[in-house]
Image 1 (tube, rainbow, N blue to C red):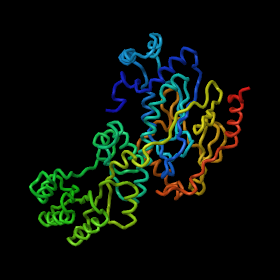
Image 2: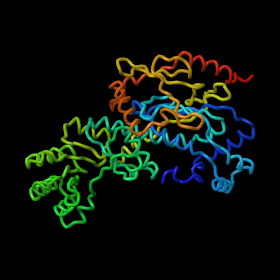
Image 3: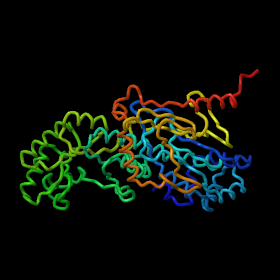
Image 4: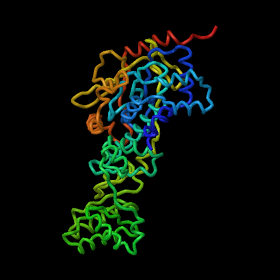
Length: 455
């Protein structure tokens, strides 16, 4: 199901092989001083103005539980990789006993800003790379997409319908969680609803209507069992389906309590307008219209701007897999070791050295720019990276609830400039400056570690 439910025997094996081979090499060479790794992305997708940090809770849970028990070591030994018996024995005592600083979940983040810092002995900090990337990347990508969908809906209800086309069961669970943090109102995923306390929402499928002798019989039977349900009306002809709902209302009289009709195909704006007219003419103004079917933020925005009388949206595939921008150029890189800053100068993958802090400068309650500075310097704004784990135990924002993360996302997104919250690319993009102290640190480290031209 979820990687943490694979059991203690399997969870620590959710690594890339090179993390284990480096771990053995670090131990053999005695490279065990404190290292600092930072997780950041280098650029935003073309139609994104920000990302929404998400996934921290799962990372901290993994770090708290990290341990290799004998069944995992036996399986690792069977892999055929060049691991010595001494290395496998040493893995039995491995624990994460380091510190973590992070942007709390629900914080808008921009390129080159650390979402997370891991401060631990080099071998262990290296070992957790792939899991950290996997969880933060997936949930941040989905949360970022979901925040755009919620913004486009402009206060109308949004329900996550994405499970069936998400990339696996873990992605479906964590994706529903990320959508909830971003402001989505409910999920169709029952296990996610139960696990995370998210409201569950669902209607009916076309197959239910098809299985009955007539559409009218199907709607009547479903409403009898679930009086306050939403009825699907587009299996055959949408307007006729709405008229059958009207007929059902007349038949049931005061016992009619259907809350909404759902339209899942066709010209949603025109069909919603026609449905609203039919319902209102029958005195059913309280019956809402819910739309679904291939929706994303662009289509929702167009429907809202057109004045379509739609009260809520079911959004599946495009939100669940972030179809237009399914990945961030995210990396987990060493920035300090043994008390010295480290950098990287690979073309297109340059890395600023040393531990950092992100300062958000606000004026009149509105974010105006970020400053990326050195850890410990006094920046011009509010520091965003917070201690969330110390010596392997959660502290502070590391104990935040899902409700806290959802509230933070709403509050922090509201502080962004309107062009940055908009769907269209912000021109210019939100500014992120590098502090003079960090620039100076980069120059000094470069002079120290980058070799000059060969003679």
